[in-house]
Image (cartoon, rainbow, N blue to C red; front, top):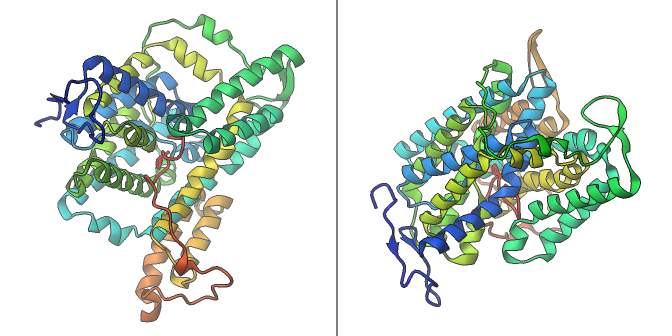
Length: 478
């Protein structure tokens, strides 16, 4: 297929035959391909603009760069791995931690750019030595713990920043989003986060009409009277224009906070490539390193101009599973639509106007889902937490990461939260494994299993892992 841009028409180009699938190197008619591309945009939309909003970045630029990153990914994998690269939610906690240290958005994007470089280099290593490198250095017990602490580290952001802005809107948005995730089926369940945002938008508007301004904290330390939904910026925004670019800045303390996310992104990419390979019937183990490197390259390009990192999205993999259309032509169409959205400042103004209370309701579910994906990795890989070799480093690392425990190295440098927790899990596991007796390394259950039989548990096979996954969400991977 060369660069993966030469597609042959599937059948009559209209509807696949019963039981047939449209392969990555095939396409339907161009109008139908464009429609599928638009559907992929809607699927990635919710998390892809929530991520930059939560991080304080320009949503227009984020959407635009997701289109460019997707093009890079499709070219690098030569059209064998149909995937969309949306904005990664894995760095939301990192952004919050860097802001807490006094860093600005340039420092955030600089730290994430370094992560992108490391991810790119990791992909090259995997291409050279194979997937066994990942399994040896980052076994499921480690990757699960890192994903968990990244997600749960975000809990204080919801509790102290978003929820207090409008607790009743947050509660209603949370309830609606939860119902949408569970009750809706198929495509609608995959955009549940997006539907929750729309619902919260409407509730905020109705509350403003019926109740007037709310008195709460909004972007500061003191409570003030303000409208829940302020659309004044939308009217002033132009229909066409370039997004807001900025150059990254590099600070060692911020980089160390961000680096642990590499583990989550590698795990996420591995899960998604495996899922796509199973769906298309084309084993893609030989493309894993290329996919990881391409993800890193896309993240470097995005952050170099001030955008967020990108990652493969499970939502779009879910759309493929539902439609049985794996054509990469649809992803090219989605990428082009994303570029057009990025050139519409009015769209960005609408996104930036999302009320804080709405984000509070969404993030309660979203951050929890990110954290619990770590547990899903454990369950899927049958990690035995009754074995102290697994239990001890995970227990210590997760509490450090979630609780924001700090370790002061010098007057100007300290490790805390995500960075320190990841170091404890990763180094603790390998050091303890080197020193542990042989019977512990055999993974025998050494603790009282109580009333639950873990050996008999039937783990649910995930469609993909990482922080860009889950119904209607974007991660790690999203």
